[in-house]
Image (cartoon, rainbow, N blue to C red; front, side, top):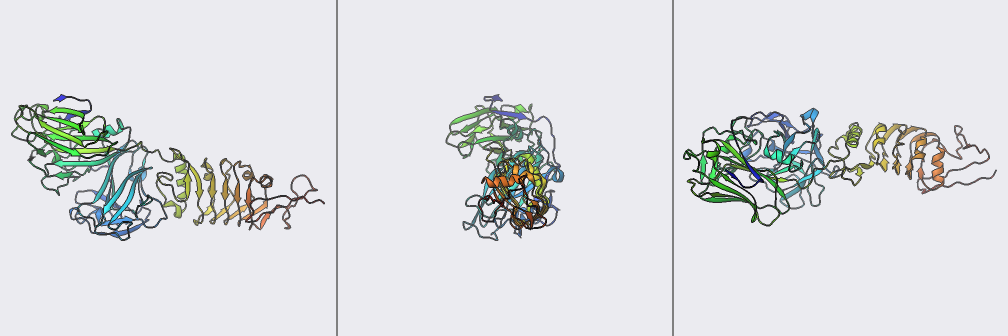
Length: 580
């Protein structure tokens, strides 16, 4: 082997390590009613709790390739516009998600012949798939759906101990979203794709674009996890390529290269005389990681030099890297060893023309080039979003978890789409700026933890059933609007409200407040700095109140008496001086 570029590298296998367990596998049947084990030995769980039982379940006829016990027998779709996204949140406590681990995440979509709702474009449905705080990809499916299911797959580094996968119909032209299944598979850190993702790609996700088994026996022979040494230990799905000529062997092939390819992938190969070219049309401005798999499985090759070929990786006419490969020589004059060639750094598509892998038979070589398998990943086009401030996410979750109407809202509250009832600051790591939980049937005392939203400018909890007093919100120095009308709040109006520097609108109508209105609030009203409404509080005292329980003196001047005139449509208040 002659290494001609530091951009691609080849590694060989020295021993056989079999990875067969499904430890850490998370497999969710969306719309399923109970758990089961499928034909590949994978355990599946229904999605009821993960989806908060939101959405509608429909039974569909699975594709013939799926068998009868399959997550493709049902879909869960999410009609209406009550929520702008619907999320499946995987965490450490319930699902064993570990911070610092890289996961293969795959979402599958199978509608069958039709969907139980109308779409914007006849015979087609389109919606978006989200991961964390980012748009993952658009899902567009022609109907009726034939062949195999539509899938989206990526490798994601878990920067925390939760992973959110969401679907949404919020984008322009989108339809009601649906999903069939969702899986997470932990990946070993020594996979070349994982190493490239964590280092050269700076933790950006890798989107799976192609995973091909060359020399497959039939076009239905997809390879994935099957619970033994022949299947894929990570449940990667390998698409068959039946183009000939084909080499095959039943001999054991070592699989202890970094990426642990399935033995069945290495037991077949595509062989073409002299040279051949494998090309993929790729969009400009994108970057890719690739891994190519080889094994010398021909019993006709008996010494080094008999199969020698070059591999060139090109973008159009631009050379990315090249290698000269003699598989027999690499394995110390033996057969059935595994080898991979992979990109150390992502390949950038900077010029017109496809990405091409060119295999050329070298002079003096008796046998032609071969290839057993290939993986191609697109690097995510930006750094993964950090999402909303962690403390604010935790605070909001603590609040909403107490209320069934709000607990169904999961995923990042701000990115890439805000919850319907809040808005956020326009930062790379946003903070929550407004909360409007009106008419949600909320009861009990107002949570004091609202004070933790430091950037909050509006808090509206109107038309609920809150009782008790207003909690201390004095830390909300940017709060402009506080709307608590139509609740059952009691006690005096707290003094801190008059000290909120940014407060311009305060609506306390139709509660059960009592006592006197704080002087600092009256002062702000008098200078037209506050629009203050408090009608419908029978036990609240203001100047001019005739109730026996009210005291009519305000301040130290016993000779002055002020009347505050406030109405629901009043934009400001004024003072009238009465001369005794």
